[in-house]
Image (cartoon, rainbow, N blue to C red; front, side, top):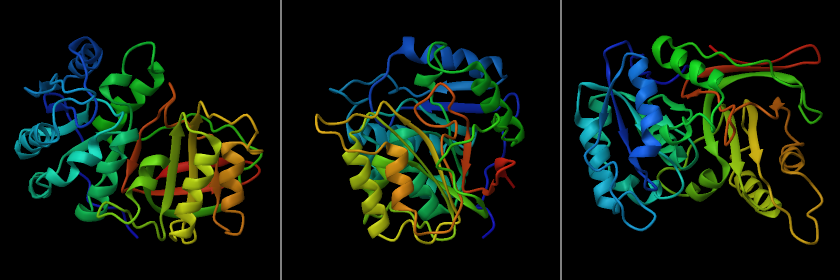
Length: 305
């Protein structure tokens, strides 16, 4: 399968927008990202309701959907950075007018809770999106500066460069090619059976997660397996499984071991500890583009084709 439709890469002078689809944010939290994007030569448009506040959320569901609709309708805006994750995107995804994005293709950028948008757009619009740090993550103490440079290069040239991948004992050798999809495991699990559930057959699946009990990881990966989401993969890439928790009586496996055990009967290549997810090293991945995953004793490579 060839890659999906790709919006145009950015160039200096292009307008980009910051929109909140989930948890609320403050101006102080957004300013480092606004300064970075401005230094790249981009014109940053801050939505009027970016700093809306309703309990945990950046305003109510209708307000957040309306904010996204406004920037999707604006032909001048070439990319939309989702301000932060947390929770809430699934509450407003069905209120978005997706025909606006179909008419005006542009990059949607984010990760974690934004997996809802990645999956919905992939399934319904066949349009590429970018799994990458969000404005909330671009504060100096939260991100590796090399990732900031990688994100700039990706957005302005289309090139994705990744650091040398550290070998992992659970990696499985092989070679696979396919469109890259995925995101946060918990969110993918929550989308099963919904209109935003994504077709994984013949594709390379990326997963990552944060702050989950190990038995939750097992429950979610088993749900994906029983739903047929793992058997037809061209490859599996596992990013950061960060800050995992265990019960007083140990589960007995790490998150990585749980995942390896769930896919042991299949033959596709499996790569662990890829530098993406809830990590300072959260390198950009272009969902919807075709990647090649190669894992052998002498080298381990994830390459965008």
